[in-house]
Image 1 (spheres, rainbow, N blue to C red):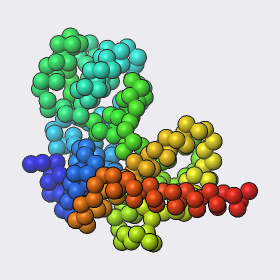
Image 2 (image 1 turned 180 degrees about the horizontal axis):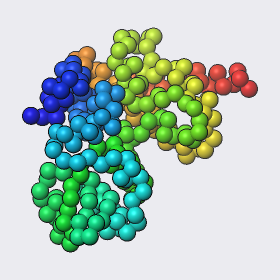
Image 3 (image 1 turned 60 degrees about the horizontal axis):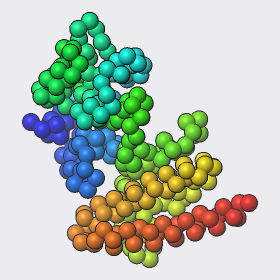
Image 4 (image 1 turned 135 degrees about the horizontal axis):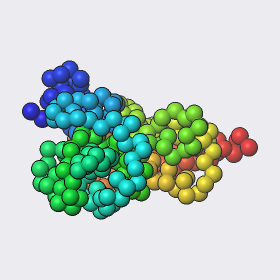
Length: 258
C-alpha cells in the first residue's frame, strides 16, 4: 500500500486532499508526504509518527537532531549525506544511528556500512526535518519551495505566515480574470514587505525571488487545473505583469506613509 493510500485508510487525510496533493506534486515535484505538509493537510510531527508506523521503524524526534555532536557530523561528508538523503545523529559503540529519507533502502545502508565501518541503525525522518538539519549542520541551502516568507525575517518579528502554500491556495480558490484578479493578495504583500522593514538588499532580493518563483508555479498549477495550455514564457509574462502592478501599488502606498 502506498503512503497516501495508507493516510486515507487511517482517516488522517481525505481522498480529496490526497488528490489535491497529487495534482500539486505533478507541478512542484517532490514527495507526496512533503506536498501534504506544505498544503497543511498534516503537520510534520504527525507525519513523522505515521511514517514510523507505516515503515515499522523508529522515528527521529526533534531532540535527537537538535544537538548532534561534531564528530558524528564529520563522520560522513556533505556530498554523501546529500546524495543518500541521510543524517548521522548518534554513535553508540560499534553502531551508527542514521536518520534516512528512505530507511528501507538496503543498498544505501550497505554503502554507509562500508564507508563508515559501523553497523547502521536506520531511523525515519521527514523530508522537511532532514532539509532543516542539512542547512544547520552542512550548510546545504533549502530550495525556494521549502522556504516560507516568515523564514526570511528575524525570528522575533511577529509576522503572519504568508508562505508558498498559502498563496497557492488563495490563488487557486479565486476565479482568474485578466482585468481584476491578482496573483497575490496586495494587502498580504504590502504588510509582509512594509511591516517587516527588511533593510538588507540581499534579503530583499531573495524574498522577491521566492515570491516570483511561487507566483510562476502557482499560476502554472492554476492553468493546468483549468485545462489551459499556456507556455512557460506566456505564464511568466502574466506573472510579471501582475507583479509590476502590485509593486507599483506598494511603492505608492509607501510614499503616502512617509
